[in-house]
Length: 185
Image (cartoon, rainbow, N blue to C red; front, side, top):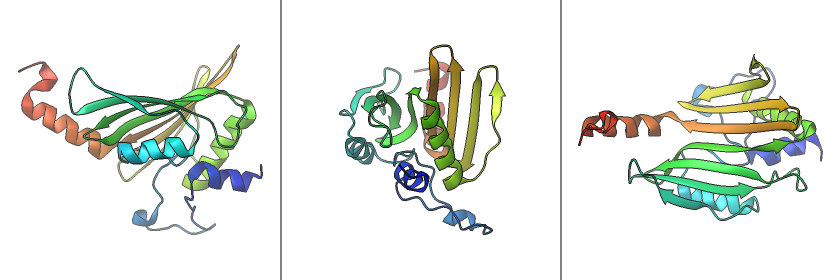
């Protein structure tokens, strides 16, 4: 598949600014991966997973807080239909996705395509490396997207994590106000 076409496919229509232009902060596209994003509703996320040919999003209430749902699904990389299934894990608070991770084994070419698509859409990011693990990270509008990969003897495993700060902050404040953080009734 043509690399430019892959970037569009991976990021589901997110448009990068033209070369040499710096868009206003409000005009920057949301941080997305395969059309998935933190801050979206569970319903929208389940629909996007279906569009990716993924398994049904299975959710259960978290033991620590009934407002939190832990959900799982499997998807295929749209550009690599023969590749192994990628796992999707997410935590939603009040039906809004707070944290989501897409992870699994990837081929070297697949990882390069992910990285190129993300850098094309969101800009270059410095690579942080610690031992066999490397990471790129983007932050905007109090949201974060992180590409992490580890090369081992059995191959490469990569993950993309998406986090919505305002949703987590709101949940943390509510828990703190109720005394939940210290195990108080």
